[in-house]
Length: 459
Image 1 (cartoon, rainbow, N blue to C red):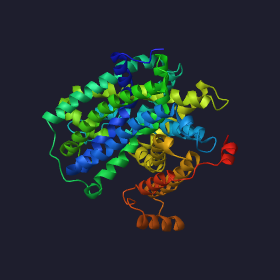
Image 2 (cartoon, rainbow, N blue to C red; image 1 turned 90 degrees about the vertical axis):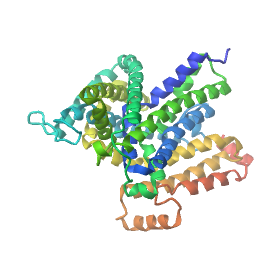
Image 3 (tube, helix red, strand yellow; image 1 turned 60 degrees about the horizontal axis):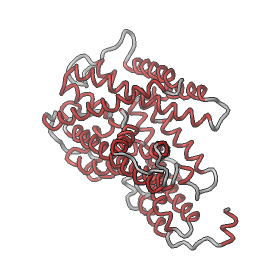
Image 4 (tube, one colour; image 1 turned 60 degrees about the vertical axis):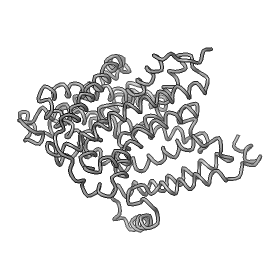
């Protein structure tokens, strides 16, 4: 069987991979990071690109290298780990954070900017009748997930067709915006806020967790493998080659988007100073550059892009959970949309803040798993190596997550966190897991090979 794709098919696979990653939710993080980093924008941008572009690219390649998704990648971990990890990731990219975030981004970027009386984004919002702005948010998110439920009911067949046009529209809008940032910046780059004076790189690195694209890559990487198989590419080396090319194409597109949005944020202090999330910054910039017509276009594209993302996430989660429980697909669609509508009421800035400790606790595990996938062939005892590396990453990342959650008031935990801060490099930056995990990864190469008895027991 022919193991080659045409140039058009290869480009199509790359653009499809880019479309999987790019969503309206992803574009809200770089503007605020750029604004807070100020003169240190390049350092923050570098850290962000590592986790928001580099890690998803490596994750896709790791899936191809393992020949499958999480079940293949977690083969050397205790039985059931793959299923547990998949459930956890689907909860995170589904009802816990990513799916409710789509409704909130739709409100912040598509609806809220249209409710300001005039001028800059910080003007006093208008109310709708007796509804306050919070009331409008509840109404909008409830309607948003009601529409999501209707579209996901048939597994998103209608929205799939619409989505093929939305990603190019969103990307074109971002290109036009990037040109505006270059030729007509809306402010000077100012001094960084205190947290970004000395730790801009690590702040950007951790902020990249918020895109959740590494988790997404681990989940839909197998989807890309299936696409290749459908086109007749089944040989592992060929799959690896084409997925790598597709990943690079997607990474280049994402890098362009993120770099331009970081620069937008860095030059936004005049029109959106003190914003509490990137949606505010981006909407203010669009309004300053293109006026109200530009805001209407942004609102339309963002609303539809958020809707397609929400339908995709709800459909994927409902489909997966229906294979594990007695509830059918449509039952799960109802449950997930109700949960998303409730969670969305916390507000965008609050939801992002709540997600940070969880992502700090789990992202290092995904990074360690990807690294292990690349080096597995050189481990003499992969079962023991995997378990030790993942255990060290888990223990250290849980402490980072606990610190981010602000639980230092618990006596014994406070003492443990104080010890971590004193003993582990990068603890102050929220990356105490890096050095211990790396050391354990190196030591894994020197572990003795499994004995024959161990092999029989594990068979």
